[in-house]
Structures are given as C-alpha cells and as structure tokens.
Length: 156
Image 1 (cartoon, one colour):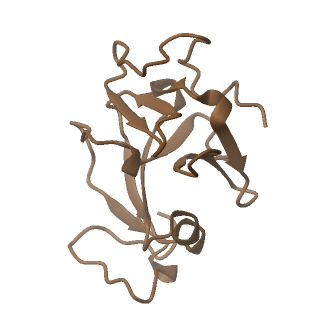
Image 2: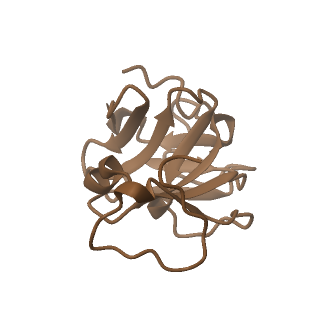
C-alpha cells in the first residue's frame, strides 16, 4: 500500500513529537503513541456506524467517525507504522501495526474525504456537528440506541 497520499500535510522528518502545527488544532494518538495524527477543526460529518464490520473491527457496539477533507488531516509521526486493511471493495481501513489501534478509513468513492476514529482524541472539536447513526439495521442485538439522533437503516 502506498501511504504517500494519506496525510498530505506531513513533511518527512519533521515534527516527531506531535506538536500542534498552525491550523491543525486537534491531535490524536494510537494507544502506543507511535502514530500521531492531526486535523483541523473542520469536521463536516459525525456518525456512529453500527455495521457488522465496524462492530467487529472496533470490538464495540459501534464506531464513531469524524469526516473531513483529506487536506485538513495529516499524519505527523509514525507513518511507517501504518497498516491497511481493505475490508471491502468500498472501504480501506488503517491501523497501527504495533498496538492495533483503529485510526481512520477511506471511502473509495470519496477520494477527497477521510473518516477519523473519534476515540483517538482527548479534545472535543469546537464545531462538531450533530451526530447520527448509520447501519442501524445491523446493530448489535444487545445494544439500545437512546436519544433523539437521526438513525438510518443503512447509509443516508
């Protein structure tokens, strides 16, 4: 897998301590802190995915993603630790090859977008849109969705 297109804001050999660069205001880490990602506070899409792939891959009832333009995302350290899993003809999922943390995914039909796992961040984006639930039709039988958030049986 060629990772050169992912996290285009990264410059080789720069910023190994994951300092926040101007405009990239949010930073997140994998569990071992080997990979640091940064993104701008430009989240346009905020979803909880209940599909069977997300449930198995994340080991939870659902996975929460922030969608934003790839140009507002970068890998500031640990690019060499990235591994990719093509979970379908539609999705490419990226994780740390040391600790296994799930980091982000690409939807092949949306080449300019990236969907970052929100569990990587300790700081809340200031302009986070209202979340919604997708693939509710295949949600875990043992989980109950509460609240008044929009729910879709598959995709919106």
